[in-house]
Length: 286
Image 1 (cartoon, rainbow, N blue to C red):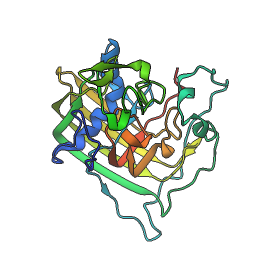
Image 2 (image 1 turned 120 degrees about the vertical axis):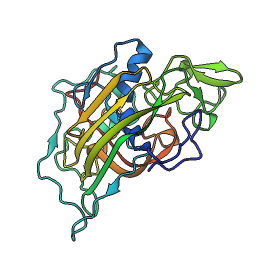
Image 3 (image 1 turned 45 degrees about the horizontal axis):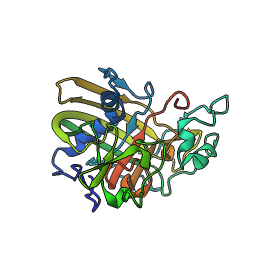
């Protein structure tokens, strides 16, 4: 369940909890169909985790229940490690992810083969919804909340890459006495209610980014876009480390991200998540 924050704003305020678990499906596909809509690229009919760039999984408004742990403090995780391969060639200096303030931390963990385990043992969370409400955030320009982004004279939230983490001043414009993004983003001020279903089980066993992880994701969601297109998202394994932001081994539970936190995009409201995760990519983003 997503807990409303004082920084919910600009059309993204928390809605009634009933049926909101399927919003996870939209957030999973957010960087794919909605970003494609912003750039004019063709939207995919089906998304499978690990095959396309930017497939971020975020568990806002998920009404998952924690599976009771064993006597030693948690649900036993599989001994099979999810692995990722560091790039054979040093990424170029102008690689977009090098602009991220998280890159020094992330680059030092890519080859870590002995990450920290979650204190108290693995946490398993399962959630299921059949044809429930989904909040589809529309692409478009975004009004910038001064609490998060400051003002034209005193800007905040300026991290790069622009529109992924923050909004630097050159990417802003004035609008009716406030600021907004110059270009459309996947996180506009408007949303539409659609329907979708999901079935997921995740395990949070590894607490830090690394080259390997014991975290697990078994996720499938189907939902209908506002234009009537049908989408299916399948994720079968986590991303042990991130390129722009930490993944915490691929699955993270019980934490706050986005907005004022600096973990996630500034363009999403500050929100508490029961669970969030990310599917892996085959190499560094280009």
